[in-house]
Image (cartoon, rainbow, N blue to C red):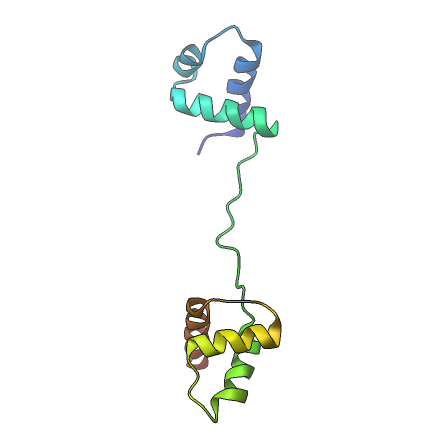
Length: 114
């Protein structure tokens, strides 16, 4: 991880326009590619702040609602993930894939044993 101060100095050198990226690379002892990335990011965002990566987009499915559907409809029939997916869409109004249903059911089962 590089300091914000180093990034600022590199960008200032780029803005001055007196040195090439290669010269800036040698002066600050960083790679040409890094100079290029920082410069491109600065031109696009006018910021030196690091990009924040959020892990995933969160759960698309309401686990409690899915559990209610399973309890309500699962007593009298054997529900497949495909059927659960359709029921979930009817009940909640959000279309989810069979694999999303499968992952959610795994989480529900796992939390039941904690």
